[in-house]
Image (cartoon, rainbow, N blue to C red; front, side, top):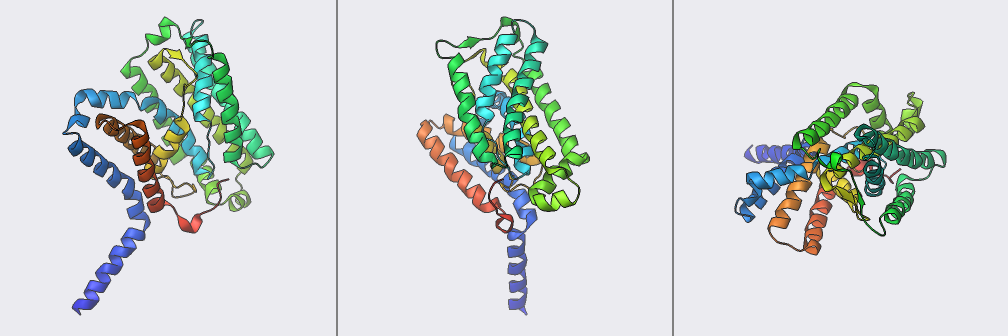
Length: 322
């Protein structure tokens, strides 16, 4: 009798560990573990008010970008152009800031949306896999950014730099999250992107305009990256060739750390954005406080990223990225 009870308990434990509930809680558990471990290793320095302010200031633009990429990855696709898009859009925002701040914001959003439309067009029209298209356009627009910043950094106006206020950046970030959450949770948009991620053929037969959904997801991701460019410009003040460098890697790692399945689909949760960006920022801050060189930091991040992918990936739904 005792043996049967023990076997039943072990079976229930295995079922819990293999189930969706545990996988959904894993990012939050990992976030708490990382905070506790880094807090101990840094002797509490990571949670000081000054470090927390610096940490928060580093997540505004990445969170806005991650919100757009979230919809693309829910489709089961991927976008490698965030860094180059941010760089080009930041150039547009900086140039237009001397004319009008509202025009600069609009210009950044339209520039990002145009780049997203190019990605979406080639992905949908020519049936090319998203990672192939976006790798090509990543190099294209990184070259554009480098061309205009070869001789010197491109400055923004004093008026836009005066907007470097935490309240403004928090307001923009929260507004983006709330609108995106509402669209994902309470409108057909959320159902459509999850349906395409779960199975494009089945989604098409159920009445989803799959090509339109995919195209608009890339446009949305680009537009939000253009908005993030405005937040980036008011923070840095001038744009160099390295603007947005490695941002696409940061966003990908953040979303996966937040629990977003690489395969997309119905198991995606909006909380993946917030948990992931916070976890990446805490990890980045903690490793910097510990004094690790950039190579060691990349190594540690890579190991943690690999562990999270192995623990959260849905092997039953595993497929090639669209």
